[in-house]
Length: 614
Image (cartoon, rainbow, N blue to C red; front, side, top):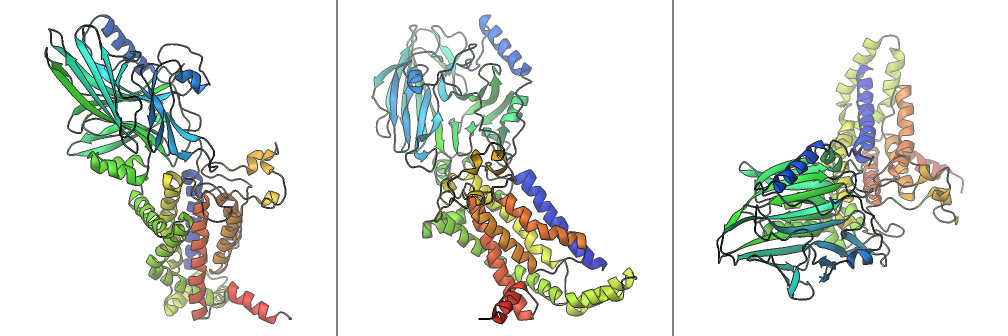
C-alpha cells in the first residue's frame, strides 16, 4: 500500500501547508516594530545644523516642525486649529482646512468614508494639525544657501491675497515677502477628488542672483497604535523611483524604516509618500525633473517623526526674473479607478500599485476587476463574490472533473483495496504490487485528488488580499446580518446569535478567547458563516476516500472542526466565497460519484430518509 500511503501523505502535507499558511501568512500577527538605531539620522541632523551655523552652503530640506523638544499634546482639535489663521477646504470628497503658518495642508477629513458602518459616525480622518498627538500633514517650500532675507519656513505666516475657501472651482493665493527683494507666491488648487496642485512662484526683485530649490514633504509625528501591525498588508513609506530604463516601487514598513532611519533615492519623476491600509498622502514632482527623494525618521524620543520628502533641482534666479515650480499632492482614498485615472492623467509610474496587491498581483488585480465588474451588474459585492466563485469553478471544471472521477473510482474500489490489504497484511511488497495493478487496470491516478486543493490555495490568498486591502470592499454589505464583507461575521454562538441579551466579549476571563481580531486568529467566536463553512468542509471530506492510516484518518476527521474555529475570524466575504465554493464542489463531486455508482454520504442520507417510517 505504499502508493496509497504516498497519496495520503501528500494530501496530509497539503492540508498541513494550508494550516501553516493560514497562521503565518494570512493572520494579522503584530509586527515587532523597533524604534532604535537612530544614530545615523541624529549624526546627519547634527552635521546639517553645524553646516548651516557655519554658513556652509546646503540645499537640505528644513528641519521638521516637530523637532523642537518636549511638548504637551492637545486633545481638542478646535484648540489646535485655533492657534493660527486658516483657509477652509471643501470639495465633494474632502473637508478641512489649511494653515497659513507654513502653508501646511494639515486638516483633512474624507467625506465619503465613515469610521464605522453607522452612517452617522464621524468622517475618516486623514491629516491632523500640529500640536495634536500623531500630527500628520504635508508641506511645500523652498530651500537655498545664504539667501538674503531667507525663504519661507515651517513657522512662516503667509498672507492670503486671493480667494477665501479652497474648492475645485476656487483656488486660493498666498504670498510672502522676505523683505530683501524676494516675493513668494503660492497658488493652491484642488480637484473634485484627492489631488492638490501647488504652484509656487519666486520673483527676484533684488539686485543679485539667488539659488534655491523646491521641496515637499509628508510628515507623520508618531505612528498610531493601529498602524503597521499586519503581515499581509504594507503600511509605511512608499515610493516609485526611476531605475535604469524603468521604475521600481519601494515599500518601507515602519519597523524596517526605524532600523534604517535614512534612505535616499535619486530619481527623475516618480512619487513618494506615506500609505495606510486605505488612505495615502503622496508627493508628486514634475515627471521630467530630477529629484532627491528621502525617507527619514528623526526625534524618536519625543515625536518619532516619519518623513517622506523630496528635493527638486536647484535653479538660479537672476534679478528681475522669476521661476515657477508645480508640484502635486495626492491625499485621499486608494480607490482603484481613481489611482488609475491619476496614473494616466499625470503619467505617473505604477501609481496603481499604491494599493498593496501583493506578490500574486497577477491574480489579485484580475480577481478584483472581475468582482468589480459583477458588482456593476448586480449591485451587491456579496453576490459578485458568488458569481466570481462560479466563474472560477467553470474555469477549473475540466481539472476538477478529472480529479473527482479519480476520487470516485478510488472510493468505489475501497472494498477491493481493503481486501488486498487484508490478503497481504504481512507482505508489503505484494500489497503494493497488487494495489498498483488495480490502479493500472482501473486507470486511476491516486494523486489527482490533490490538484483542486493546490490550485485553490493561490486563489484563496488572492481573494483574501482583495477583501482585505481594497477600499471598495470596506463596509460593503451582503444580506441580512452581514453588513461588512471585509469584517468577520458578527454573529456568535455563545449568545445564540443575538437571541440572548448578553455580549460574551464583556466577560473578563474569556474576552480574549472569543473577541474578533482584525485579519484572523484562533478564537472561540463561532459564527453562522463559520459553521456553514465547517459543515460543507466536513461533507466534502466525507465524500473523498478515507485515509487507510488510522492516525491520518483521525487528523482529517478533526480538520473541519479546527478550521471552523480558525475561519470564524476571517472576513465574511471570504467565508461566503469558501462555503459557496465547497457547495459547488460537493454538487459537482456528487454528480460524478452518482454517475460512477460510488458510495457517498448524500445518497446514504437520502436512502435512510426513504427507509424511515412515515
